[in-house]
Image: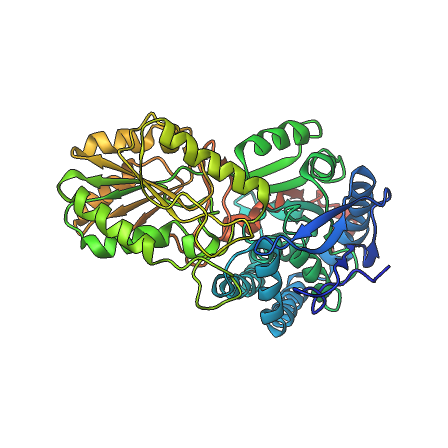
Length: 502
């Protein structure tokens, strides 16, 4: 059995690797010996396997995190911040092999994965810079009383991340919890676990044992065991609405603090005063087609276009989508790779089939691209003649599928855009600041972009409304969410004249 490391050992034409989990500073197997396959979605070949952990793994990881958390907290925020910066530097030193690993395991294009590694490094530096902001406040009292608050880490944080941005999420979404003084257990998406194992490999040389644990397995077994574990008081999850509901139920049994960043069916409202061709290009960019093939919770898949420019915009959108080059994501000439795994390809293809059956018009895409005999490829797809009640306009596809709808009345398009159980992001394209502010005020979403394409400036809080979850990430709020507030009131003892008088 190998030591479980994967950096520099995974590649096409190489023997499959037998990765292992990292718990308490040790490379570990699942007690059952069961394993999950890691498939290259471009070639459908086996890259390696990871342990299929279950309840015993959850117990071991929580115990290791509990053992490490006290010393990690006691280091103090300045030392923790310095170690997070060291981790950021260590990640940066192997940025290219990490990016290649994510391309092989997820199918996302190499340019996008380089950007993901850079983003993870930025998040480590950002939260290292904020680490000292977990201080409390004092309350005015009388001359004999001092009252103040302090913020203390939960101790153990479970961080469950999805398959679409493997390293970025495994690394970046642990940064705030680590900075706040917690030991962290990361469980990556079961289909794209290899770069999380690589994160453990890099962190092993920087962080104390047990501070960052990486475990692998399915959500139904390992994920459920982690979120229901009474030794894990803080759980953060990114993924589907259905799984988010199950996590809330499981964690509620021990009153765990849960935050959720869930799905989105995000509207993009295009006003008649825009540059139409630029708006079409931006609509594709905000779908994250070229970053993750539309496998993004922030993708703006419902495009509401003013009727006066609808035909022109649709033509420009179709033209832009047809320019996208689909193929091997390791080839820098390509813009888009395959979807991450076979079951997801079938899911996205099912959405496309149902859209056509419901009466939507397939304007472009919807099939396997030419020249891709193997792999989980789907063409970027545009539907027109879409109405609000169609499933394609209501269900999250999580793939490169866009729907174009028309509008003519501003109040009406706001009502239609808000007519969903989800509320993660919304986007507005206009040159009229009055319209921009009005729509930003009225759209029911946790994050509204005006003339933007979905990029999140560091420090800008990100999180959903309604069924898209609760809790904020990407800013100071996330750091504080990994702490508990304690109030301390100290009353001075009464003077004893026998010893107080000189």
